[in-house]
Amino acid sequence: MEQERNDYYPYQNVAPVMSIGQWLVTFLLMAIPIVNIIMIIVWLTSKDENPNRKNWVLAYLIVVAISFVLTFIIFGSITSFFSALGSL
Image (cartoon, rainbow, N blue to C red):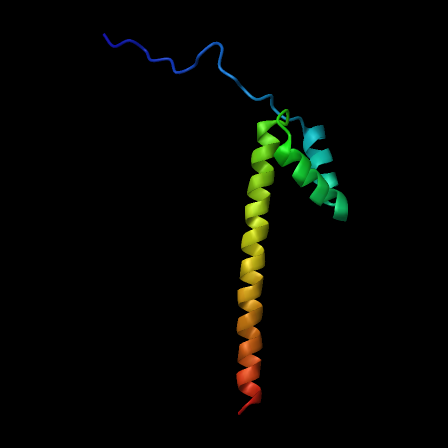
């Protein structure tokens, strides 16, 4: 008979779940122009910050970086297309 494997350790560090209110405050702060940059820096550098929020901020920054790169590529393509079209 096989013994059931339990990967849960009783003293494992588990991050507390963020409530709906905490997420609403997070999204509200991210909607305020200068405050969002300050809060991103605070959330990423704070050692006491909830890991869920920290991971969300990292994912948010990755999405923003990808969006900027794609915007520049698309804008450059459109600009070069119209530039080539104008030289005909």
